[in-house]
Structures are given as structure tokens and as C-alpha cells.
Length: 402
Image (cartoon, rainbow, N blue to C red; front, side, top):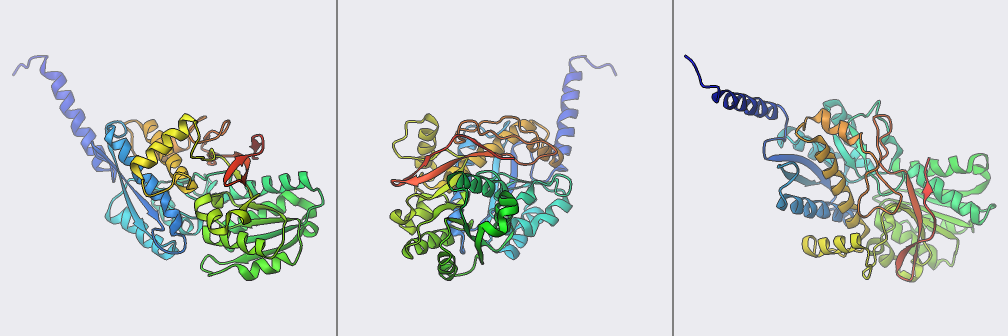
């Protein structure tokens, strides 16, 4: 039977569509119209204040979907609560991967929860993009190829080093008192301090005191640290409650050292206000996102403010966690756009490891996302910011990480 040549393109189109559908069928979470991925947040428990990040994620993806999605596909984020408990994180992750068949994991909150699922996800070759932790352990493309973090500042080791160098420029003979969270995050900070001090570490560190995330209070640790009369106080927690308690208790003792706080706690709404604005005055931190102010005329901050009003109306735009969530959601969209029509797990992680000078609206000038197959650190640089007169203000030039 002789067919018209006009039917050949139709045959090729049908074969192409069939092949495309078959390919999608082999890729969990991916269809012609949808990209389904998993997320875990502490909507309950001691770190529930951080769940604002998840709310910003959801609002941003809703906005993207209303504009047509990414390359014609809608974004379907399935977000579960783990209460910031690693065993619950494991349970929720397995459910998302094995029952909900998500294409990848995205933005799970915290070093300890992400550590609990790292071996499982890496072994299953399921990408975990932009998990929320600044721990240095996530920059390990050889042993943890499928896991990549997107912190709000340089990683904990580098951040601590920046703090120490900044403090010693003010007082070369400064003695340091350190409060640190007893987990991978806090230990990274402590390592960064010791590396920055080098041979002077034993002499310069007056005392380092740890605490557990579940501890109801850090008051006893603060009283012990205050008794050292150290010149510099480093508050290295990633949970808002402990940071606020540390600021308030240290202030109540009458101890007035130079104070630095972890970048994750540099949040007016969740840390400075509970600590007391007077007590928080003068606190410094390393930051990579533009400090928010309600009267800012910066077009990018105005757009963010409008987004929050429309999409997450019950959260103050000044809440640093919301701005961070907004930024990380934008970064995911960049990666998925780079994937184009190849949404295999292999290409998703490959594109995440191929970010070149990506500028996002809330990043401060000079801070860009850069990754490579050998270096998974998206952000390496930041600025010193100081909490003064009720808001954070930039007080340095761009400070380069290693």
C-alpha cells in the first residue's frame, strides 16, 4: 500500500510522543504536565518557627504555576511535617520517595534531619536539591553526589572564619566565648573558629559550651560563659529559641562583649524581638541576602514585599526565613529551566551542579550562585550585617570565603 508523504510527519510525531510518554513513565514524579517533588519541614516541634520557609516555597510555586509552570509543567511540591525529629524525617522521606514517587527531594530543613536521610537518598540516586543547612559536609560530590545544600550564607566553617577575622581586626588580642549546638552544624562552627585562630586557638578560646536542640533553656551555659569575661561572644545555634535565649540572658548578666550570631538566626521577627530589641542591639552576623526594611524602595524588595502580601499574608516580610525561602524557590526554578525537557534524575543533579553566576533578586551585590561537579557550594561570600535601631544594616564590603 502506498502512503502519502504527508502522513510521515504524523507517524514520526506519534512515535515521538509515544517515546516521550514511555520515558516519563520511567521517571518518577515526571509527566507531560507535572513535576512532583518532596519537601519536609518542621511544621511542629522546637524548630517550628523555621517552617515559614516551607510556606514561602508553596506560595512561590503557586505563583509560578499560575504563570504556566516551568517549561509547560506545573510544580507539585508534596510537603510533610517531621517536627525536626530525624527519625520522623526518615519516615517521611521514604514515604515521599517510595509511595508518592517524587522525582526528587527539595529543601528539607536542618542539618540533623538531612543527615538522617543522606545515605538512603544517595544510595537510591534520588537528588536532594538545596537542603537547608550550611554544614560543610554537603560539599562532597565524590561521596554524596546526589545531595546539595543552598545555605543563606557561606557554610558554617567559612562563616565562623569570617566572624573571627572580623573580630580580630577590631581586637587582635580578643578572647572568645562560644555557645554551639551539639550536632554537625554547631561542631562545624566550632571547627571554623579553631581553624581561623590557628595556633592561637587554645589561648584565644576562653570557653566553648554546647547545648542540645531539645534543651528547654541555655541559661546555665550562658552564665558559665559570661563568667569568662571574654571579649567576643559567638552564638552558634540554628534554632531561633536558643539564639534568643542566649542574647537575652547574656544581656541580663551585664556582660557586654562583641557579639556574633549564626546567619540562620539573624532574623528580627524570630530572634531579635523575642530576645528584646535593646538586648539585641549591636549583634553582628554574616549575610548574603539583602536586609529587609518596610520602607525600602529597592525594586527587588518591593516585589518580594508584594509577593508576601499576596501569597503568604500571615507572615511578616521582615521574617528572614521567608525571604530565604523565596530565594531558594527561585533557585530551584532556575535549575528546572536549565533541565529543559530532560527531567531525569541524572540531569536534574547535573544541572544543579552547573550554575554559573546566577543572580537572584534578594542576593546582595556581588553574591552569585556558582556550582560545579567538583564544588557544590552555591554561596561562598557575604557581608557583615549589624542589628541596630530595629533592623539589620550592612557594615562591610563583600567578604570573600575560601
